[in-house]
Length: 569
Image (cartoon, rainbow, N blue to C red; front, side):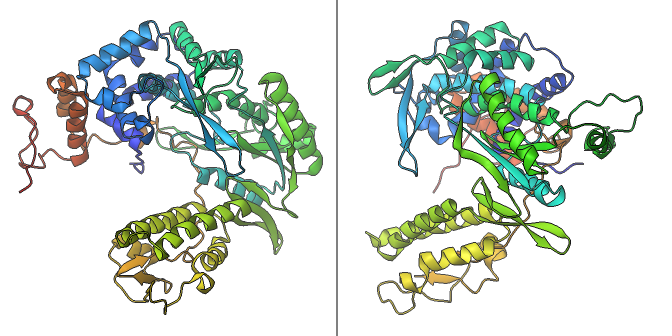
C-alpha cells in the first residue's frame, strides 16, 4: 500500500464521503471529458456541509464582510436551513459587496485585500471543491502554488534539479505587474471552458463573482478586470490563468510533439496498477537537439512567481522577450522591465521564495549552494529581535511564558521553512548572534534576566529534534530553542503520480465504518445545529475506531446512537 498522505481538507472530505466525487471528476478530466452538469454536485448536501467544515476553522471566517456577519451566524443554524439558503442563493446568485481593506507590505506599500460576506465565502468553497479535481488533472506538474500536496519546498527542489542535475545555469525572471488587478474576465471564462467546465449556469455564477462590487472607504467600485485578493478562489483562478503559460513554455521543448515513424522516443515507468511513475524523454530531446533549432527551456512556478531555466544566454534572452510578449498578447498582463532579467548561476545568485541559490564548481561538476535570501534574513532577524526584547523586558511577569512560547514557535517555523537552503546552518548562526548574542544582552550575569545552561526538556519532539544541541538555555525553567541549531534538509521533489485525487493514496476503509458514517450523515438533521452535527461526525472520524471514547461501547448499532458529553468533576 502506498504511503498515506493526509491534510486537513482531505480528512474533511473523508468525513462527508466526498472523495469519490473528486476521484470521478479527476479521472474524467484526465480522459478529456466535458462537464456540463456540475451544479447538482455543487448544491449537494455533502458538498455544502464539507464547504462549511473547510471554512469554519479558518481564521478568516471570523472576519465580517460588508453585511457584518461571521461564521457564527451559520454555526447556530439548523443544517436544513444552511443547505436551503445556499441552494436558494445559487438559483439567482447576486453576491454581496466585497469589503476592501489595505494590508501594509514590508516595502511601505499596501496590498488590497477583499473580504466577501460569509455566505459568499461558503458558496465559493462549494464551487472550488468541485472545480479543483477537474483542473488538477490539467495543471502542469511544475505548478506548485496553492495546490493540494504542493508547496514551496517542491518548487525549490525542482529548481535545484534543473541547475545541478540538468546543468541549466541561465535563469529568466519575468515579473508580472499587478496580477490580481489585471486578470481579463473574458479570457478567464474561456480558459475555464477550455478546461472542460462547461456548465452554463456555473459559468454565469463565476461571472457574477468576478463582477462583485467592491466597497472601499464608502466608495462602491465595479471591477472591469481583476479579482480581489481574498476569499478562497482567487489563487485557484490564478492557477487557471497561468496554466496556459505553463503549457506554452512546456510546448516549446519538453512537450513538443515529434513526428517520427519510429517508436521509442519516450519511455514510461509504471507501477503494478499501470500508473505512470516517470517519463524518460531523453531520446526525444536528443533528436530535437540534432534535427531542430528549438530552444530548450523549462518553467518552475509558484503562484505568479516563476523561473525559466535555459542552457545558454542566447536562449534565455529569447525566452525572456518571447514570454513578455506572450503574456501581453494572450493574457493581457504587463511585466516590469526593472524586475525582469537573466541570471548566470555560475556567477550570481537568483532569489526564489525566500531562498537565493547559485551553482559552484566541485570537481568536474556544478553543485547547488543556497542561502536564506537577504531580505528574508532581515525579516527573520527583526521578528525574532522584537519577541526577544519582549522576553527580556516584559510589561508583566505573567507574559514571560507567553512570549517564550511565541519565540520558540517562530524559531521552529523558520527552521522548518529555511532548512532547504544548503547553507542554512551558517545563516542561522549569524542570525542567532544578531538576535540574542552577548552584544544584545544574552549573558548569564544579568540579574533581571537570569539565563541558565541547565534545565529539563519537557517535549519529546523538541528532545528528538534539538536534544543534542549545547546551545539550549533556560529562563525561569522555560527552555529557549537554539536559533543556530539547524541542519540542511534536501527539499522533497514531488513524484508525478502523487495527487490528492488519485485513489491509491486513500485508504480509510480500515479506519472507520462507512455504514455508521453514512448513517450519521443521513441523519444530520436530528441535531439542533449544523455545528453540533459536524462535531459529532468529526469526533467519530477522529477516533479511528469503532468504540465510543466516553463509554467504550461499540459504535455499530445505528439504532442506539445518541449524543452525550463528559462532565468534569
